[in-house]
Length: 388
Ligand code: HMG
Image (cartoon, rainbow, N blue to C red; front, side, top):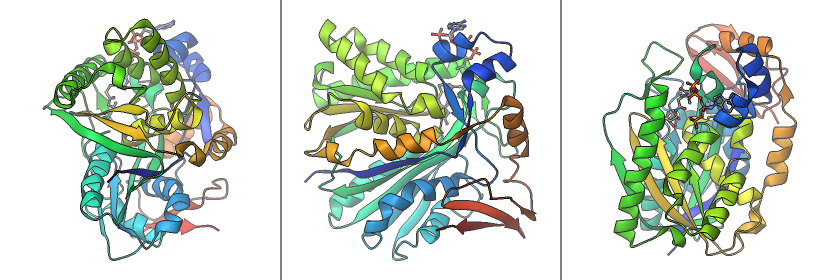
């Protein structure tokens, strides 16, 4: 029985900065950001959005019809809003989901959503009449004037995992690798991540190699079994480095095809930046919505990486009629309707994004048109609003 991704959706807030502007403000050659890093734009997260609201905005349209069948809600995040209460409980309440459910949060840097969908896979395999909602939602923050600044961003991806999925089914066994690595971390007293950037790039490729080699051995597979590879994309160039590290295994024609599919898988990410645990799935969505050459039955390889570090490589197969569920018009209009702001406006917003540490503050929600917003923090409790 096939189990996999039945529906997938994405949300990012309604503001962005251009990487050309950021490069000029930081006295860098714009081509370093545009070509060397591979990013064009970066979402800016207002104080009225956080991991919970972004997840609710992403999940609302796909969870509506499945409210009664979802009884597993897994929230992958590394920018959670409370040290005890899970973001999944807030999400369950905002979406008015069934309360006869398991709802919890998972953290392992950018790997959280992958842990979530793999747990959901096993649950749905045992209970084929049930569905799971898995989200990856994060705000990627490194700090102004840091090398990581060009790789910030934020947003959420939500997925429904079911039996007989409309889009993609898991295939074969995953391969994993984990090791204690200090490449990226965020101490409890900080809202910005600390990172050993060049080291993290090397570890990423190393983990990809390890999991890919093991995957091939365990599943008796070769590169020619794959139509496309999608990667966790902290920034677009990182995925290119991953892909390049295996391309020599393919013949010339396949190399050209894999590079061309990769170009489709980066279209959304290069406009949004890193959304940490949702990034791999945004790239998958970008491939599904933008590639013209995918067919049902094609196998896609997915590499998930979470600093610290956990890597996993797994495969999914496109289901019959998957292309009927393309939601590119909606996503393109969400991205197109974002407002470009200046670097000084972004700096102001960045510095005021203290909503995880302040108490008794009210936020002006008038310029945030999302369905779910954070309106207030009162007595150390977060007050969320839903607008119709
Ligand atoms: P940097 O030191 O500012 O940049 O930091 P650089 O000097 O390495 O240059 C970047 C690239 O631009 C290089 O290309 C340059 O050659 C090129 P590469 O050698 O890598 O192919 N370049 C130019 N290209 C064209 N025209 C020019 C030009 N100048 C230079 N004029 C770094 C870059 C990514 C390290 C930094 O932004 C950073 O620390 N980012 C955050 C860390 C990160 O994203 N790591 C990725 C792997 S870890 C991961 O994925 C997990 C993560 O998502 C967190 C989690 O799991 O939760 C981060």
